[in-house]
Each structure stands twice: as structure tokens, then as C-alpha cells.
Image (cartoon, rainbow, N blue to C red; front, side, top):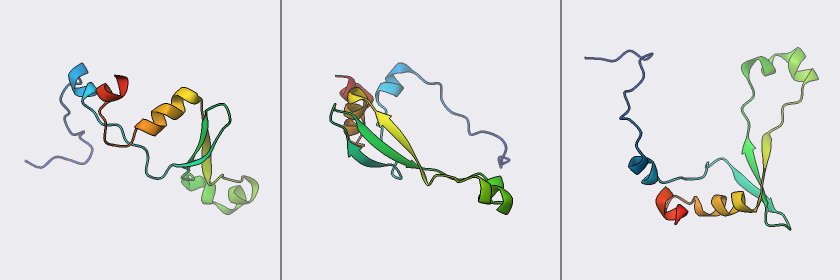
Length: 94
């Protein structure tokens, strides 16, 4: 039986054990711009302009940035460094 495109794919219920076995990865489009002296980092995440931004009057008046900058504190930077796709959430916690 075919599923209509509007119907969500059924997901099994989330459990702690399933969440701890998850492997976090970085967004492949995100890139690290720089490290800051206090141990933080700045990450650039590309933005997708909304369709109405492409209308000429709006496009002329509103500048849409190519990326959004995310400033990480030292703990966020450590987490960014270990989310390399090789460790589970449980291993990162330990």
C-alpha cells in the first residue's frame, strides 16, 4: 500500500538507550571561521534566502547574509570538536 507524501513516516518511540547510541555529526555545510583566545570558536552556517527575498524590490532593500555566525563558548567548542561522526553520545558524555 502506497503512502501519500503528506503522511509522516512512522518512527519508533524515542528511548534513552536509543538516544545514547546516536552518533552526532557536524553540519557538512558549516565551517569553522576562527578560534577565539578564550577557547571559543566561530562557526559559519550558510543561509538559504526565503523565496520572497528574491523579488527585486526586496532584494534591493534588504541584504541577505551568505552565512550566519554562531559564537561558541569553550564548552561548545569542545562539543564541536568531538562531534566527528565516530563517537556515540554516550562516549562523548563519558
